[in-house]
Image (cartoon, rainbow, N blue to C red; front, side, top):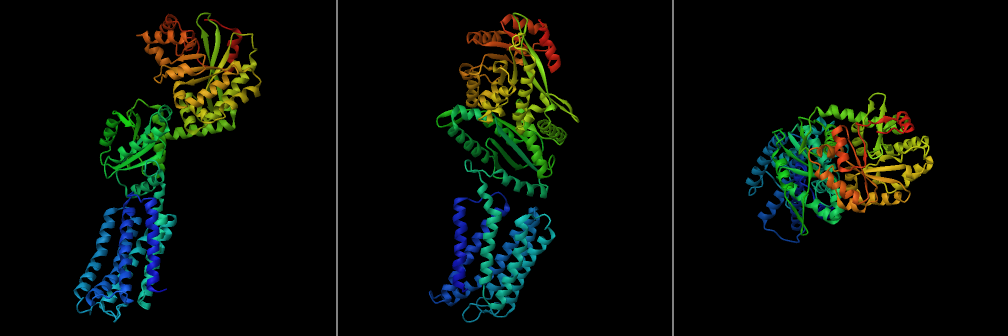
Length: 640
C-alpha cells in the first residue's frame, strides 16, 4: 500500500473517532482520558505533515528546498515523539502514582530533546540526519541510528512496566498493553528495512481506534438526562483510587421522597429537578467528580485530607438544600439525605465501598433525622449482621414455617370488646434466633423480599381466621400490613385476592394497613388497589397517622374505614392534646373509626377516652401474642 492511500485510511479512522466523540463526548474522568485527547490531536497533526510531505514528493505542490527539508525532518522526528507519547499513555494506564508517571516521562523526554536539538541544528548541513535526493527515506547516519534506536527504546519502555504489572491489568487492557509495544517494534524494524512508514502509520491509527473502543468508548455510559458519568465509570475511578491509596471523600446523596415529588409536580419537572441538582453538584470544584448512581441517587468524590464529618462540601450542599429551586416558574424545596465515606480510612477496595454504600443508603431510609451519616469501619459488623438477616429472610421463603405470626388485639373503648387484631411478622432463624420487625423489615423492603413475605403472612393469617368461627365472636377482622414494595407490582390486588379466595375465607374478615408514607410514595397504585379490594368488603386502615407525612388528598379520596394514630403522636399529645382533639373531630366528621396505637399507661388511656378515640391498641391491654394464645383469647372474648 502506498503512502498516500495509508494517509487517507488514517484520516478516515481519525474522522470516525471524531464523529463518534461528537455524539458521545469524552469525559475528563481521569488522566488517561485527557491524555488520549492530546495523543489523538498530535497524531492528527502527524497525518497532516505526512500528507504535505507526500504532496510535495508527488510534485503536486513545489516547496522551497529548505522548507521541504524541514518538513521531512519534522515528519521523521515525529516517530520517536509519538512513541514517547504512547509510552507516557501506557504508563498512565498502568501506574496509579501520578508522580511516578511524571518522573518516567521526564526521563523519556531527555533523549528526545537532545535528538531534536541536534537535528534542527543540522538543517543546513544535513550531515547528522541525511536524506536521499527525494527526501522520502533516511540514509545511514548518526541521526538515523539515534532516531531508530530511541524509537526502539520507547517500545522497550512500554513492555517492561506491562510485564511488571500484568497481574493488575484486566481483560482488554492487558491485551492492548502487550499488543502496543510489540506492534510498534515491528513497525520500526519494517521502517528501517523498507524505508516506508506505512506500517508505523497503520499501527498508530489502529491502536488509537482500539484504545478508543476499549478504554474511552465507555463514555457512552454517561447518564443521558444529567450528563453525569454513571456508576460504571465510578467503579473505574475507584480502582485507581484504591491502587494509589489516595485520600478521598465520597459524599452520597439520596433525594427524599422523590417519587412523591414526581407525583405532585409531574415527571417533566422531576427530570428538570435532577438536571438542576446535577448542575449544582458539578459546580462544587474542578477537582471533584459527580456520578449519578440511580434515578435519585448521586455520588460526589473529591480529594480530602481532612477525614472529619464537617466536610465543607457537605456544608455547601446543605445550605443549598435550604433554599428554593426555581423550575418553570415553580418554586420548590428539595430534601436530600447525605452520607460520607472516607477512603482509605474506612474502605480500602471496591467491595468494601459497595458494602459501605449499601449500608449508608439503608441507614438514610431509617435515620432520616440525621443530617449527615458518616460511615465507620465499625459499621461493617452491623453490615455483616444485616447480610445474615437477609440470608435468613431468603431461607424463610423456602421454609415458610420460619415466618411466625404474632397478633396484637385491638379493643373497642365503648364496649370493652376485642374487635380486631393486627398481624405482626417475626422470623425464627436457627442462628439468629427470633427476629423482630425492627431487625428485618427495612432490609426486606430494600431487597424486595418483603413482597413474598407479605404473601406468606397473609396466608397464615387466613389460616388463623379459618380457625375462628364467623359470627361467634366480636372479632371483625385481622389486619395485615402492606409495604410500599408490594405496590411496585401491578397485580398486587389480584394476588392478595387470590390468596384470600384460595384459603376460603370471607374477604370482609381481612383488613390491610397502609402507612401514610407508602400512600405518598405510590399514591396512584395504592388508590387503585384500595378501590378494587374495597368492592370485596375488605377494610383498610391508614396507619402511622400523625408521623409527619399527612396529606389531605389521601384523607379525602381514599376508601379507608380506619385511621391509626401513631404511638409517638399519642405520647406527644399527653402534654398538649389540642391537635389530637382537632384531628379526631375532623376524622369523625368524615365517618372514620379512629384507633390509637401505643396506649401503655393510665395517662394514655385517659387521654384517648377524653378526646373520643374509638379503639385502642397497646401494651396496656396486651402485647403481640403467639397464634395459639390469641386463639384462646378470642375464644374467651375478654373485655377491658
